[in-house]
Image (cartoon, rainbow, N blue to C red; front, side):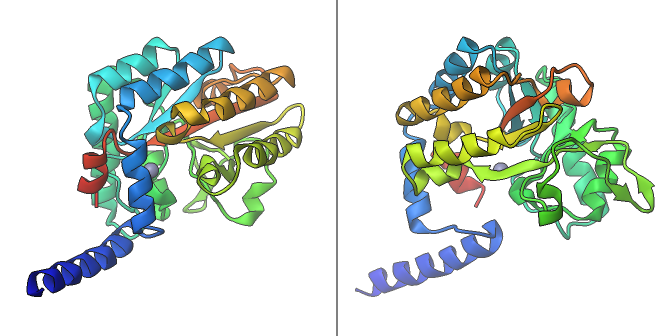
Length: 277
Ligand SMILES: [Zn+2]
């Protein structure tokens, strides 16, 4: 009985810690969901996704946490013609970290990914947690773009990448307006409903515009969500959208209008998920 109480107490404090460290929605049901998703090996999820994308010659930009990246993962992505961006060195919130720490995480993440063969041009902060120092680091390190998600409302109507103003000057890197929609909706709503929300968003992209969609490989690579991914990519192709990487758009090498498919790789296994807590 005492043991049970101690365990329950530990669990409660662990969950409190989890919520404070991970910042949002860290709860038992999410953990169980992640456990379920990670029962399929990550390379299988990735291959599932890449198979669908290759049918439409669609490119995907994977924002990968460098400390968990493996050569096999990066090879698979590169061989399919897709892109790797940095999702920092560790999956931690950057907002509030000292400039030096952020600089070291971002710089080291790019170096690690580059050593494994990825030509990293872009960044997305874990938990979408930025501050001015994050942007200063990206500028100083010469990143081509940042693709942070869920920016403020005034960025949501934009359909082209833009330059931020940092310390009174225009950033050298481009920032992408990323759709506020996420495949996370698939955990709560029927696939058809989520697809409708995404296609509505696609319909609103102007002829010279770009929309960046968020699709997490750990979810959309599941066999039961491949139909959703296929329908989404098929819809974009049928509507005449190109599906380039974020670097191709940033360098003006993509045909417009474009739908950029992107998603984060935070963990390769359930133990990675637990370890990052
Ligand atoms: Zn992430």
